[in-house]
Image (cartoon, rainbow, N blue to C red; front, side):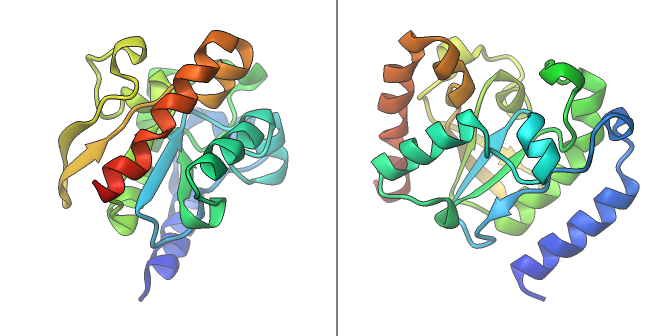
Length: 189
């Protein structure tokens, strides 16, 4: 069974079995998308309104900015894999709660194991805290960490500000653009 078939099977299982309380208020699960053979895996925090409606991650304004950032380093959405820490939209786009993140954690870890990327890029503090619970995004962004992931050994983690944060706080935009340039360096350096 290839990686895409494994992801399809994984998603079927978790859409059926996930205990996340957000299932009751969301339209649908927002599954990861992109290349199952990606070297780079991006992890957002949770789906927003457009993502919830269409079932595709990062298609709103933050997703458009993410596409611009990818283009700036000669990557396309088809080259990466992108998913969320929480697979269901929190009401009113509030931050996901710890129990909601915990309910989706095994789903996320299994995605990572199947894809086995060279680098994992958490976007925002909630995604980063999966891997680096004691770090602050304001201090950790743009730094490369090596951490063990069950079944995969040591993995590179490059936390970045969430593209939505840069849309709401213009001063973060230049920082995110600069931090993005570290992705090809990390992959090929």
